[in-house]
Length: 146
Image (cartoon, rainbow, N blue to C red):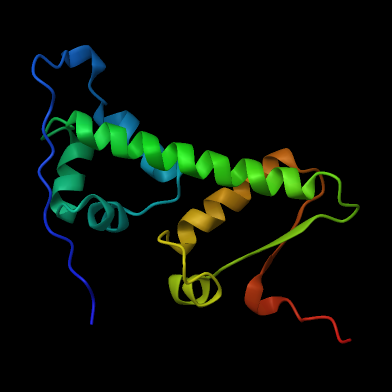
C-alpha cells in the first residue's frame, strides 16, 4: 500500500521581491539536470503533478519554499556526486553501476528516496569528472567468482 503525502501549501515570505523568485525556466532546467520527473518532484513536494506543470509553464508563480526545496535537492545531489568522484579518482579502472528502472534501483538501494533517473543523472555528472569511467547496468554486472 502506498503512503500518500499530505498536500503542502508553500507560501512566500511577506514582501518577497519578484526578482528573487525562481523562474519557470530555472525550475524545469534544474529538475531535468537532477534527472527528476515532474511526477516524482510533485510527490516529493507534496503537490499535484498538474501544479508542477503549471510552475514550469509559468501559469503559477513558484513559491519561495519550493525554491528552497529545489536548492536542497541540488545541494544533496552535489554532495553525493562529490563523494562518488572522490572515491573513484585514484582507482586504476574506475567503474560505476546504474539502474534501468526504479524497481531495480530501489531493490539495490532501499534507503534512497530518489528515482533511478536521478541516479543516472548523477552517474553522468560523475563521468564528466572521472576520466575513463566505465558505466554498466547493475543487472549486467556479474559478481566475481571467489
